[in-house]
Length: 134
Image 1 (cartoon, rainbow, N blue to C red):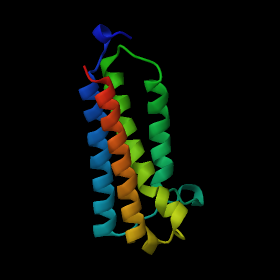
Image 2 (image 1 turned 180 degrees about the vertical axis):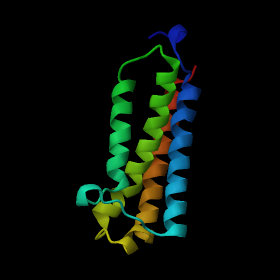
Image 3 (image 1 turned 60 degrees about the vertical axis):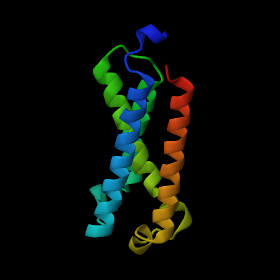
Image 4 (image 1 turned 30 degrees about the vertical axis):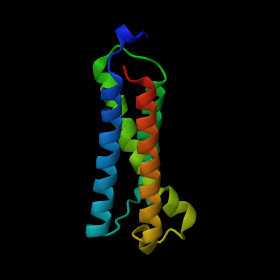
């Protein structure tokens, strides 16, 4: 798509991904640190929000791979990508660098690892915005 046919500006894209990313991460961590760790076991299987994040982010990324002229679809796919990405990035260090206990989830390792990933994602988004801004 050419610049004149963009459905959303680079700034709108940045904000539609970044704000849900930061908001979702903040809400997840606030809930977990204030309310404690809660689990969901559909069919007897533990479902981490990493998995839910993948189910949200992957279809959004596929939609973004193809330009759309539908403004609602353009907006919702970016918001979904921010939300799903936050859910994924929040659990990576927890699942890889700890024994994945409830205590580990609210540990400093998990929290600061998640903060580092969210920070890096935000910096990447800002860099991409600077490369694509009008």
